[in-house]
Each structure stands twice: as structure tokens, then as C-alpha cells.
Image 1 (cartoon, helix red, strand yellow):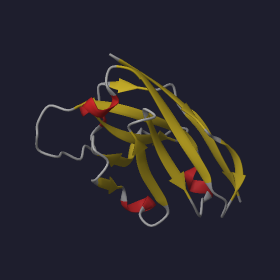
Image 2: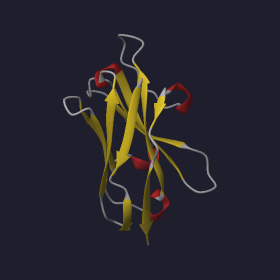
Image 3: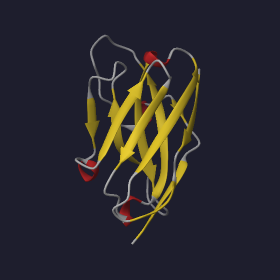
Length: 128
């Protein structure tokens, strides 16, 4: 089992940047592909970005491509989400999630149902 704790959220203005962190504890961090999701009030949880266990493959939702960057430091058991050029529509609770590696083939997971563990979320609010 792995425990995930997000941090770094806050209130910013449109155009600003934030970096979210997600610290993992428990099992070996590199045993997991990691992802970021978000949920805005009244909306379903949606995929934001994912990174493979080794950190060499990433995939993004179209609405964040070119603005957000996911990365990980396996030595620090942490995954990051660098968010630049923030927009009011990025306002949401952001969650990190871990999906246990089940294959030697690199898999980039965008479905929430395929993630095994979730953090408690961190609020990001972008004012116009």
C-alpha cells in the first residue's frame, strides 16, 4: 500500500504559476505509474497528466498541454505538477494518484478507475 499527500495548492491570479507536489510513502515509489486529476465544483473528476514509473514517458490532457508539466523524483518519492499560465477554469481540487506497475511495457494511464491509490487533494483557485 502507498500513502499520498499533496501540497502546493493555493489562490493565484490568472497567468500565475504553481507547483504541486505529491509525496508518497509506503511501498517502493518506482513500482507505480503516477497521475494527476482534478475536480471542479459540480463537475466530474478529470484526467490532467500522467507519468510512467521511470519518468521517461508522460501524457497530458489537451486542455493543459503546453502549460502544465508532470515530473517525478523517485529518490524523493515525489511527483510534481508544474502549472504555468493558469486560467480561472483551472480552479479545482487537484489529486495525485498511483497505479501499480503490472507490465514491463510502459503504460500511460488516463482512466481514474485504473489508479489504485489517491491523495486527499489540494485546492487550486485561480482568480481572473
